[in-house]
Length: 382
Image 1: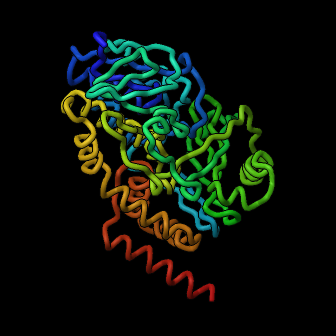
Image 2 (image 1 turned 60 degrees about the vertical axis):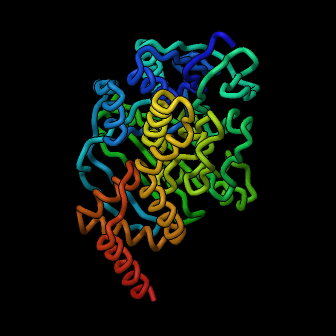
């Protein structure tokens, strides 16, 4: 008990690395330990997209040039379930960086800032007064659980995971594409909706490709998951030959649990912080990790309430917006109307990007414009 860490972070992905980086950024003398069950670099099934909003977070963490050597892309094309199309230039460029690279760079940055990094898989947790003890050997004043969708720490503190109805499943791979391909593309599918495939060019002649759908929709098919996911990916992206296919679960934000318990704070996927409209999670991970790291060193006596307030300020209105939009988007006609409107009005396109990839909210006039288009499309079909 004499060897007490100010902060122990479990999980070295974007949320965990952000927590560690922020804690040392604000308190350079803080003792911060980062634990992960894997050595870095390591692969992680993900869409690999890092929006401009994520780069803003990297700048706040003091690593603004972490992905500067990757080609930016401003072009985004979306096809709705009913065939509406929009192709436009984003207000700010996005990047696609394989998680094998991105996560390792974040961990290296944390290590360079004085964070101790160890390979260790947490299996037990005990609360002893104002200390948290992991596996009987690691003692912390605060813990950030950033150990993913199947978080062990979340289970150990008795916080329930997202229910199945708020969980998606996706398969991700890589494919060769023309070197000049710089359009991030999303192809939505009415069958099994909500469901879509994507192709996100990295800039080196390859692209991250994949297909995702809600877990209950997959189960409803009665078919093996691999057959459904791989088959629909091939159907929607017939021109690519995907390799290194890996499936992963995505706990969506409408089913998010409380942000922690006691001196343990949940961040990133462990907190079910994944956008229900797009499946984006890296921005949420960086934001929540940063806020958890801040709370750990700035409110050391009781970090969880400070973390909760930080999340509410940074993401509260946005998450309530996406909760509502996730309900509305159960109707493919609503998405058709949103994409149709975005094709006609650039400000709606930019808004969809901000809501889907960042912390945007929807002004009433623009919401009414989409609803009006939804109504008109419905009348025409009748």
